[in-house]
Structures are given as structure tokens and as C-alpha cells.
Length: 380
Image 1 (spheres, helix red, strand yellow):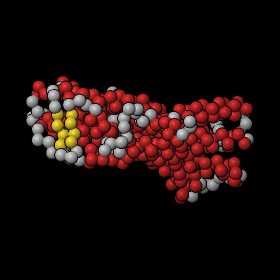
Image 2 (cartoon, one colour; image 1 turned 30 degrees about the vertical axis):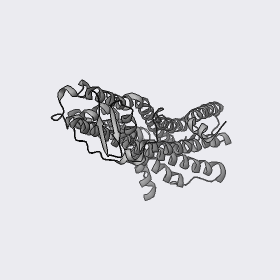
Image 3 (cartoon, rainbow, N blue to C red; image 1 turned 30 degrees about the horizontal axis):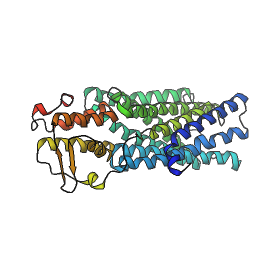
Image 4 (cartoon, rainbow, N blue to C red; image 1 turned 180 degrees about the horizontal axis):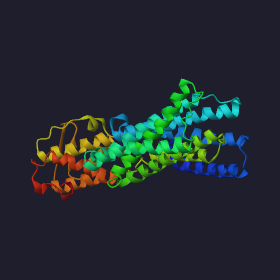
């Protein structure tokens, strides 16, 4: 009954159930007021270490459905999964120091190396996701350009106020620090700045056009990023005050942040979309003679850059679109207006208005070649 396929299909529900159990476990630890018991150190092993690694492995497998590194969404899943993987490894090392090693944890430690990669890949993943959400198109507008200027300023100002002015009493904390420690401190600080800036920029530009089946995964990811930002601020303050201990409220927020990242990535496994796309459909370059065929091809190829080979999966579901891999051709039969409307609807159902904007931009390239009566209103 519990086959590998069965477990794989239920990875996210299983992780959610396990997280709920460890959340109850955390409540019990927190209610005791203890700070140095076995439970304080052991608690994080699964929700902070093992669960993110399992989620990352699931994410790497899922990325194949979206073309792995060949599409923005595929790259986003790979990078975010790598981020979760590195967080899990770093957490296990941290717990080993506390629970098994019984030694004073060096700073920086091996755990910091993995957490540094966790930050880097999270930023890369969010940027790639932002491309799929249409943030790049909004950057071309006056509002987008203004946001591009304001977001870094706000990010730097807020991070300095929260982490330096409040968290460390106005001091950078470089006294008696080695060059390596200063580098790691600055890396973490700049990481918080970049994460806040990128999240603000992407979400600020895309929230009105983001829709479809990917809306909630993106929202979950961004909520997780905010929790991680708050958790890091709490950790910074407690470290400066000498009041940090394992399994405190900050650790719970860190755990919740990564957990939401895992759930967000897993939620991109949209049911009903096949991951088995014939290679010839993914790679071929049709030689369409008619303008309407070229327009359909352009729309599909634009979507391929965002969601990978799944774009072909969605196209072949549209009645009236024929793809002949052997003849290297694509053709539209029936009413082109209806076919285009259905094709755009398929993509809009995934990414909402973000996908619609991509389709509209592709249409502008052929606006003078295709009769206006064949272009649906949604593309005008």
C-alpha cells in the first residue's frame, strides 16, 4: 500500500502533518520555560533539518515537470529546493554541535557555510519566480522604474533600523571580530537587505496581475520570506543581548519560514499536467507559413521560457491546434479567434494575468500580419 509512488504523491500532506506534531512539541517545550534541555536541541532536528531536505528532494523531482533549468519556473523550483536543502544540512550540523558534540559552537561554523548558500539560492529562486510572475514586464513602466529605485532604499533603511539600531543598539558589532566573522556578519546583513528588496520589488509589481493556480504558492512563499526576515531580526537582537536559546520563538519562525517555502514549491505540482512531454515537441522549431500559425507558435514559445515543456502540454489540449513533430509543423484549424482564446485561457489558468501579459506581448509582434477579426479581445 505504502509504495514509493504513494508516498511521493503525498509528500506535502505528510510534511504538513509532521510539522503540526512538532509545533505541538514546541508549545510544550516553550511552556516549560526550559532553555538548555535535551528537548530544546532535539526539537529542531526534524522540522529544521530532515523535513527541509525531504522537501528539497521532492522539489528537485518536481522541477523536471517544468523543464528543470530550461524555464524560469523550473529554475525557481531548483533554486528554492536547493535553498531548503542547504538550510536543512546547516541545521543538522548546528544540532550536532549542541546535542552530540557538546562543545562551544565556533563562529563561523560549518553550519554557517550551508546557511550562506541557503540565502543565495533563495534569492535566485525568488528572482526566477518573479520573472514568471511578470515582474520583468512591469519594470518597463514608469511605476516599475520608480519601484526599482525605491525598493532598495526602503530595504536598506528598514534593515539598518531593525537589525542595527534596534537589534544591536546602533553598533555593527565588529569589535574583537576576525575578518572572516566580519565578512559573515555583512553577508547575512546584506542577505536580509536583498531578500526584503527583491520580495518587495517583485510582489509590489506583480500582485495585481498574479493569479491562476500559482497565486497561492507565490503568496505562501512570500509570507515565509517575511517570517524568515522577522526571525533573523529576533535572533540578532537576542544574540546581542545574550538571551538566545534553542527552540525559542525565533527558531519557530525560522522553521515556519522554511516549511512554507517547502509547501510553496510542492504546491507548484499542478495536478492534471503531465510531466511526460515528448522530446520532439519540446525541441522542434516548426516552419509555419501562415501568420496565425506563427502567432500561436510565438505564444507557446514565450510560455516555454517561463514554465518549460508544460507549455506544449497545455497547447496540445486546445482543440484546433495540431502539432506534427514528424513534419516539423504547427497548424490551426477552425476559428482562429476561438483557438487563440482557449490557448490563452490555458496559460492564464496557471499564472493569471502574468501569463496573459506574455501572450499579449507576443501578439503585438504579429498585429499587422493577422486580421483583426481573428484576434480575440483578450489579446488586444
